[in-house]
Structures are given as C-alpha cells and as structure tokens.
Amino acid sequence: MVRGKTQMKRIENAASRQVTFSKRRNGLLKKAFELSVLCDAEVALIIFSPRGKLYEFSSCSINKTIERYQKKAKDLGISIKTSQENLQNMKEDTFSLAKKIELLEVSKLKLLGDGLEPCSIDELQQLESQLERSLIRIRTRKNQLFTEKIEKLREEEKILMEENKRLRAKCGLQPMDLSTTTIKEQHVADRQSMEVETELFIGPQIANRKNMEVGTELFIGPPETRTSFT
Image (cartoon, rainbow, N blue to C red; front, side, top):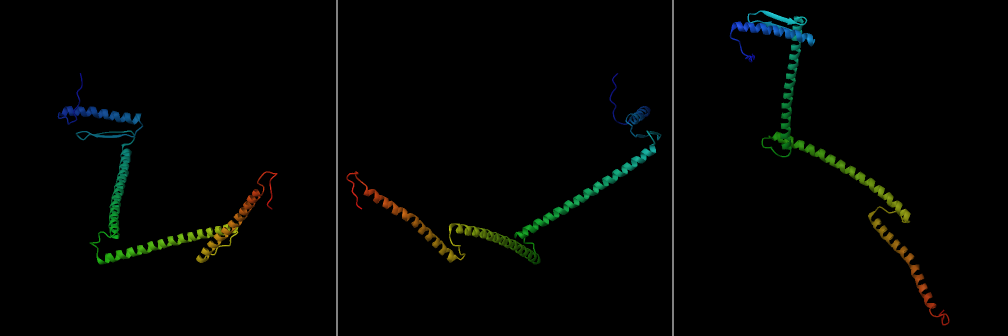
C-alpha cells in the first residue's frame, strides 16, 4: 500500500495528533542521539508537548549547551550591531563626500565665470581675491620656467662658443669678438682671407699650364725640319 504524502498543517483529530507527536518526538530524539554519536557534535534538544510536558536530550550538559548558545548569540548580535554601525558611518561619509563634490563643482563654475547670479558683493570680492592670488602663483611659476630656459640656453651658447673657438684655432683664424659689429667684420675678413688663399692656390696652376702649352708648341714637326724659336 502506497503511503500518501502528509500535508503540512495542524491535525484536527486530537488522538491522531497525539499519536503523531509521540512517533515524531521519538524519531527526533533518536536522530539527535545519532547525530551526536556519529558526528561528535554537541547536540541539545528541548521539546514541549501540547500539554506542556518537557522532553529533552543533550549529548553533554544541556545547561552548558544553552550557555554556549547564549554567548554565541550575544557575540553574533554585537557583530551585527557593529556591522550596522559601520554601514551607517559609511552612509554618512558618502553623503558628506557627495556634498563636498557638489560644493567643489559650484566653486569651479564660479571660477570659470558661470553661476554668479546668486553671489553677493562680498562673495564676488572674495572670488576676485582668490583669482588674483591664483594669477600671481601662475605668473611666478611661468617666470621661473622662463628663467630656467634662459639659463639652459646660455649654457648651450657657452658650449657652442667654446666649440667655435676650437674650430677657428684649428683653421688658423683669429678668435671671434662677441660684439655684433665686430662679428660682421670678422665674417667679411674671413671670407676675404679664404678668397685670397684660393687665388694663391689656383694662380700657380694656371701659370704652369700656360708654360706647358708653350713648350708643346716649340717642339711641333718632324725631327729633321724642327726649328727652335728660342
């Protein structure tokens, strides 16, 4: 015979309810005992019948188990309370940060010249003073960068002048004067010197070539009829 599924609701018949209670109570006590033995677990079971009769089971001392439970529940409650307090603090911090971000956004718009309609004269003067201080810091930093750049260029100029001096000495030229007029005159003198040296090197070559041509003309013709014009 197939056993039907028991509906989870109160049994209306008192006799049937008492029989069911007795069976399931014994089964529950047996399961608690098996759990404590097989799994080495600390088990405490308390049952009150519909008439108020007490049934209990404990693998050790039921009072010690209850005390342990109460302590654990207390610690768990404290932990939950701490977590709730931390959560509340986080919510408050989040709200505070959101408010600060909103104020910073408004201040940024005012610095850009927007949203100035609700500002009073004192607020506008304070904003103007803040902008002036910012401009002073910006200009100071810009001048500092310019000064550092100029010093760097001067160092590079010094290195280039030393290299120029070395090359001029290697080419046999006079050291260059740093004044503007003298520099121009020095360039002209250097160019003329180079032209003169070029002529000196080219001139003798042309004269030798003419002598060779003359010598060639003096010895033209057969050996027996060759005459000399010298």
